[in-house]
Structure formats: C-alpha cells, structure tokens
Length: 332
Image (cartoon, rainbow, N blue to C red; front, side, top):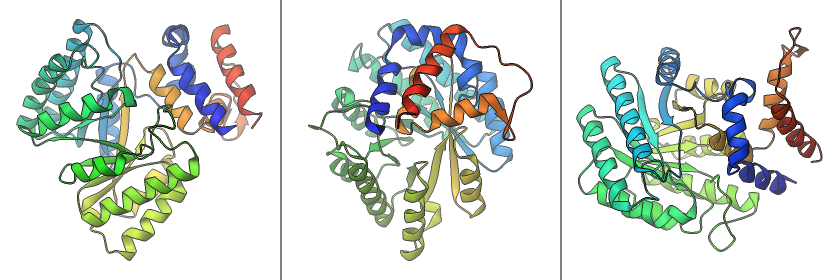
C-alpha cells in the first residue's frame, strides 16, 4: 500500500487540473504549515524567526519544468533578489534551486547562462547554491551543467539521491563538493533506481556513512528517526567532526526532532520552500511519507487533541481531494 500511495501522490503532483485548483483554493487549507508563504517577505520573516531559534535555512523559490524563457528569467531574478536580502541582513541562509525552473528544458546553454548570473552574485556574497537533482530524465544534463560551473565557481553543490544505482559513483566523482544526501522523491523505473524501501534505506545509510567517513561536508536530509539514530551512533563511534555534518529537514516536519538535534550540538538546516507554485512540491513530500497526510488533516481539524470549535470552511473541490486521499490512506 505504501507503494500505491507513493504513486498516487506523485501522479497528483503532475496533474495540472489539481494544481490549478490547489493554487486557487487550497494553500491555507492544507499547505501553509509546510510552505513558508507565497511571497519573498513571508519567506524572509520565516528565515529570521528560525535563525533567532538557532536554525540555519535553505530557501527554495518553488517552480520546475518551465518551458518559457521569460518565466525562467523571472525565477532567476527572484533568486538573486533573495540573495541580496540574505546579504543585507546577514541571514544564516543559502539557496536551493532546480535547473528545470531555470530553463533546462529550453536549452542547456540558456540554463547555464542563468546559473552563471546567479553564481556571480552568490560568489560575491559567499552564499552557497545547492542544485536540487530532479528526475532521471534530467540527470545527465544536470551533471554536465554542474561540472561546467565547478570549473569557475566555488559556492555550488548538489544532491545525491541514494535510490539511484549510479548514486555512489556520482558521490565519488563529487567527493570535493558540498553534497546533500537524500533517499529520492521521484517515481523511477527499476532500470535506474531501487524500488523497495528496505533497499533504499540500506543504500542511504551506506552512502551517508561512506561520505561522513571520507570527511567532506555533508548534509544528511531525512525525517526517518531510525536512519538518524543509526547515523548518530556512527558519528560517535567513528569520532566524526560535527563541523563536517549537518542535518536537514523540511519546514514544518518533525519539529520536535529538529529541536532535539540542534540542542545536541548538531548544525541543523531547515529546507524552506515558498512561492505560488507549491502543489507539486507538496505532493512529493506526501509521496515520500504518506502518513504526513494524517498529520495535515489532524492539524486542520484538531488543536491540542481536541476538535477545533471554530468551523473550517473548505471548498467542495478541496474536500474532494482530501477525502479521496484519506480514503485510500486508511486502506493501508
């Protein structure tokens, strides 16, 4: 059933009709706990708040699979604008971005041009840029662009999706580059990626431990407390320098565990998405962990384990979406 739910949410993430409905009606109902607003100022205020609590942030202006140059140019300008704000306020924050938002599906040359404009500013401000890897269709182009950028820029790195068979070879190729290690959030075929949760978990731990042992700065991005417990034990046993590791989680997820890791002296970065194009991101987070759907619905209906007294006004379309997801979830 977990596999079915993952496919369901990934399918929904690509549904244009649902995306349009969600953007029009659904944000305040299901996503505001996990998306830091739809505009720059909302996101900046969240960064300030998290920084004051001792958390670092990485900000993602949501958007992907763009096919119009003007839209990609606007995305680039918003990323640069955010970097100006980071520098002006000296915030503890870096940028995460997707190359398909910056025109990768238009042309690699165009995407590379926009990335150079972003990294010119990033290098000047000493702000790290993390290239979020996407589906396998874009893998080779992403690596080509990254390798080209690494010839001229220092403040750029990427993500290793451990469910890919090629993940270890790519990690070795990028051993001197700052990396984030994740399990993987896209639906991929058995030809290129592990399919079973047990295999993916084992590969994630293998890659994370190998990277930590080799000493390159590594971001460990998972909400799985079993994975985290195993890695904490490994860090202690192998006397890994805490300055070479950070944990990352998504904004709004497992906040008590985020606080715990921070209080234990680990650097902790919150992945902070914002923007109007939030639906695809949100569905993939549910695909990674379908039980997050239960958390969302309970958050809307209950407060301190009691049914909220004030009525919640939902549009019929949003009720339909939530009911469909919840019905399938409860069949698990």
